[in-house]
Length: 221
Image 1: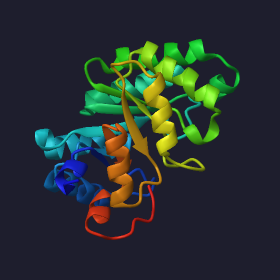
Image 2: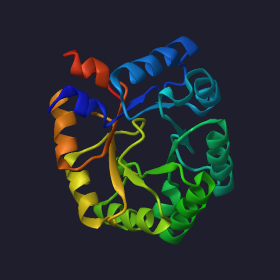
Image 3: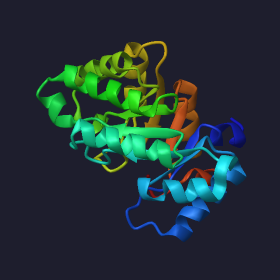
Image 4: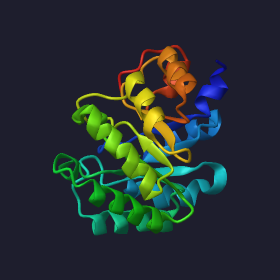
């Protein structure tokens, strides 16, 4: 698969809590140079990036990250603020406590509330597959679909494991026709990238795509 095609599926990511403005600038400039789908950065940098780079790149950020146990109102406020600051895409983390309590209706309602908050911007829902049973993953596919989100996303990259091809296959079997798939975490080679794209992932979350496609081994998400 052509490198430019693979890069067009990438949310070029820097979510390290110690990231400096100089490092954020580097990631943004790489995203522009290599025409990645977006740059995914901490919320605190969204306005500064949007002000500097404008329409030169799509800004993605995270909400309820990385644990997901904030209240729905907190997440709604975060998402609305991110959009006001210039984010075109928001990746939210679900409340895993609600999953373990089998309160799937609460998860669906939270997703719907965040989708309302972001309006016509893209909403991706991180379900953190490494902590879930197969049954829970299937239920969450329904939540994401019924909540009106644009994407289901495997992982934060901060959990105990990342994306697997098996989870992507499971998503494909259970999400609605309007929901796309983002794989994130543990994508460390060009072969990994190609396999996820060929299986049906519209997006890949990785901090190392440029290095991967330059033939360097990636250290992780």
